[in-house]
Length: 182
Image (cartoon, rainbow, N blue to C red; front, side):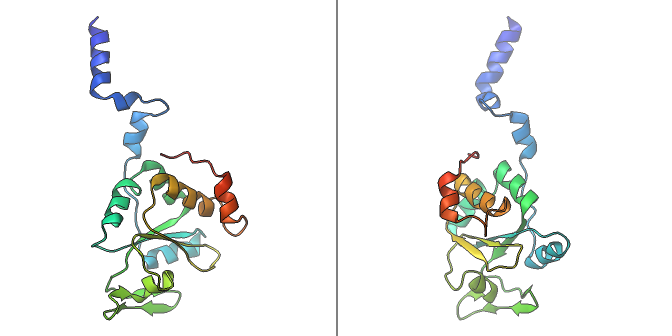
């Protein structure tokens, strides 16, 4: 009887430990942060092993950027997939640091309150947050503006990370895509 009471008490205290299809210990072990790189570090790694670069373009004052950090970039499945398939870069669009990229230097422009690199990546269509994918083949950056929930992020990550970009039209891919992350 004591064992049943203890087990029942455990269930009542932490019902999420026993959620269907979910392993509490795996979730706890997987909970970590993305190891964000600088643009320069990502480019160095790219020389050794080709992978797309994922850039989280944000600003310090952007509320949705903070929500995306808290809700999307803290999800264990998102973290694991990004770290396995991309070189992740967190870039403040308003950084005053000089950014070196493909032999060019990009500086902060006070008249626009933005770093030139952020403007280049977004073709001047600045929106925060923005998820930018630099494909490994050197084709132009692909910018996805706005807040992405985990299922939306899964769609984007798998399109680029699983090699569909450049081979399958995004709309066709989206129609056949089945989300598995929540």
